Length: 311
Ligand code: MN
Ligand code: MN
Picture 1 (spheres, helix red, strand yellow):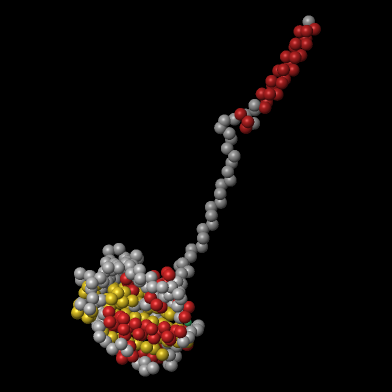
Picture 2: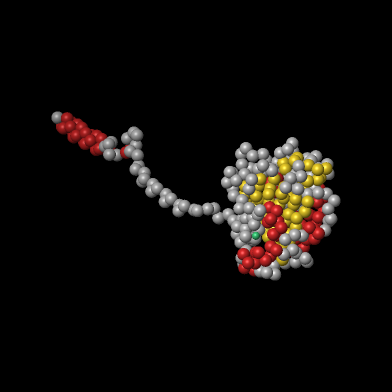
């Protein structure tokens, strides 16, 4: 009996143990629960929306020392409905492009000593990748065998500080079919003279363009090239405003500011002296319908535009 009593105690003790063990298997204990109770994830607070940025802070072509600081001569815009006066902002210069001519009306740029560096000519003439869809885009080969040079408006040599800047001038939207001897002689001489002015401590605001139809290249007279897709201009022009390198440019343009304007036919065999082609800005405004120096005080503008450079 004594043994039986002992056994009973043992059984009692065991059952207590079992009960305490089963307590550890309590459903509140995660140890043998499947699936485990998910740990509550705090709901993320929605990100505070960024305040709307009006425009990316890219340097504007209208800023001081930029392409169109003195004005946008034809009020070119980047609206594709404005297909005869479409604005390409190429950062290193601005273009008014004419879809129907497949050339620029004009290119405009600013140049100062810092734009001159050691970068060599990229020579990567190419179609403008931003040409609106459906518009013909002249490319590397469009002028081949035409008898006309791929003439730069904004010159390669004015953009030698970086590879990117130089390469940008080889977009075909900055190129016109130019009589080779014009491009390589009188036009080149004026470009070189501009670089002399910059090297003497000046900064220049330049706009160059072309209008009309029909020029004479190495294969004779032509109104179009590239199977009729590209118009050959009859006349080239350029307007150059010369000021000492510095700031507050608009307020430094006065009645003594030098403005060089030239207009010349798109032909070979011209005088190589650019001075022989000087005209007033008024003459180019009359021929093109554009308004140059439109941001310059109108009294000073009117006066400067009547003058013909004689230095
Ligand atoms: Mn300046
Ligand atoms: Mn004007």
